[in-house]
Length: 188
Image 1 (cartoon, helix red, strand yellow):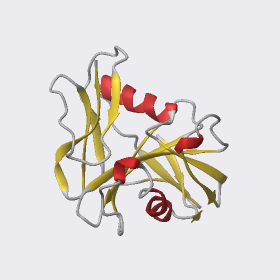
Image 2 (cartoon, helix red, strand yellow; image 1 turned 90 degrees about the vertical axis):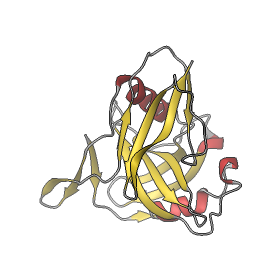
Image 3 (cartoon, one colour; image 1 turned 60 degrees about the vertical axis):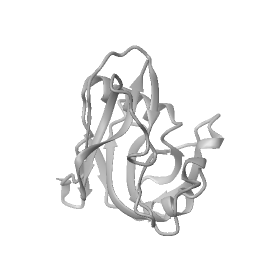
């Protein structure tokens, strides 16, 4: 279970995403002039060191962008090209944010969830009075499959990739999207 602190972030998550999302090549044909957060889900890092969160954003042209990021307490050596920004977290201090599509911890979490038939992490919010369960609005589910080291693909723009029928997949629903959409898949 993920633990989220009531904290001030600078920049905020939405500000960070609005600044970075226009940069990657996968967003080149997307109107990123206005981005609205429509959902998010988390996975647990088994070692408890890395925050794993995927954001779902609606672009100005109505497309849904799938943007996984990681939050780390130190730079990830050798991953400069995946660096997004640093954030100040009022409880945890400085955080280094990386593109989750390149971060090995997030990629392992995607693969594990997909092949095990797992789901997103539940999470609690830490308050002055203790922890409070947070009501989830975005749900992801792995289809299950063989753990044979296949190729992982993260779908960055929902509905734009023809997923092979034989591929194990991660599907999700969020407010406004009741039919499961494929967000990632593994194929041999």
